[in-house]
Image 1: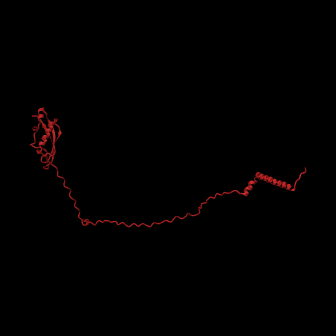
Image 2: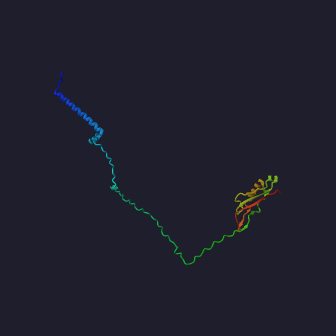
Image 3: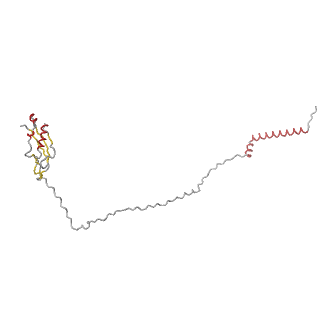
Length: 214
């Protein structure tokens, strides 16, 4: 059986062969570019990398600082003067100048020495002073109590007591001591006061009351 081909079929195959050859060549070219690093260069040329620059703010040291704000001056405060009243003492009259003299000043005489105190009479019991036998307690008489009571009486110039008499030393028997106090009170007005320079004065007298059974 004889084959038959038309001129259109030969042209169709020729185009397919050219297209196939171009495609294979492009692929071979890409492989070569990748293996040699030319592809990355081509990419860098076509789309260059983005460069980022860090811009640092440069401080300007040479520029002078801004001038300070103007100061607001306050108007001075005027304080009115204070009225101070000063009391000036009036001049007093003095005789300091008029009393100046050339005559020597006489010294004042020294004070007179105090008068000498002379006891002209000692304090004592008067002649009419009570007797201890008149104040002897009956119980002490029955019991035979005896002793001596030391007393002290204070009286004025007239012999009258100025305070209650007191026992300085006990007789050893309370009844006799109480009787001695009654005796000293009964003698008020019968004491003889001490006299100084002939004048009676208040006096305190110590005396003994003797208790003896008769």
